[in-house]
Amino acid sequence: MAVRFILVRPKEPGNVGSSARAIKNFGFDSLYLVSPQRPLNAKAYALAAHAHDVLDKAIIVPSLVEALEGCHLALGTTARARKDHKTLYSAREACLNYLLPQDQLDDKTLALVFGPEDWGLANEDLDLCQGYIQIPTADYASLNLAQAVQVLAYEAFYAMQELETKQPRSQVQESSLYPAKLADSKDAPATRELMERMYAQLEEVVMLIDYSTAERLPSSMRRLRRIFDRGGLSVHEVAALRGLWRQVGWATRDELKERLRGKLEQINKDSP
Image (tube, rainbow, N blue to C red; front, side, top):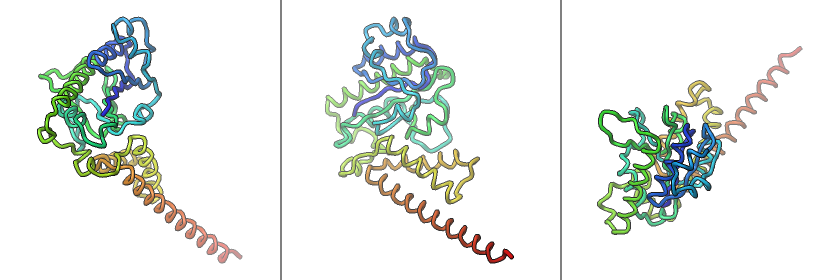
């Protein structure tokens, strides 16, 4: 499984440069920047040291959704306690779970997502991730962005070393998102791009059938996302769900049209 490092709205170019150096130190080179608050400058390149190539080919996109295109799993870093039920990993647990060989998963991409220096990832960003990573610390939990990237880059490198020593899979905690039954099946895991298309369609259906109001929609979708993200859905499973929701949408619209037609007929009958 490949690793993509995504920095969301980074504030300081120097931290981006230091992050690029950390990534290069441990053998990675895939860096995405989501709406950086300042352009890369001389300080960024100075702190990147021998990782100028990582900065040169860093991909800048306007949204996290676009940064996750082509990824099959996204894990967001957070220092805050979370009240929802997504899987929470330490840095080592996350990398050992998803970077050791998993048959059909070997050619897939894991996204490690980092938030801006001041506030970290917003809830809307974390909604796009299937799980969370917390880096264990003592009482003071705040890490510099580049420090957090370096810790995760090291742990990913460590997991790759475990792969080379052929550590038995049984020694690592089984992934809750990609269980063995899915890794052994013929269905490939759905990418985040496919999942986001599915969620966009689900959101339309949720509103169409009055399951939620506009005010409650974000929290409703957050709960539904947690349900489906925990399932580690395959491409075929996503297609089946989208087909079901498409049919629900058609049936609901047909019913609404029939009701409207009945109301119009009644109005015409009551008219003098």
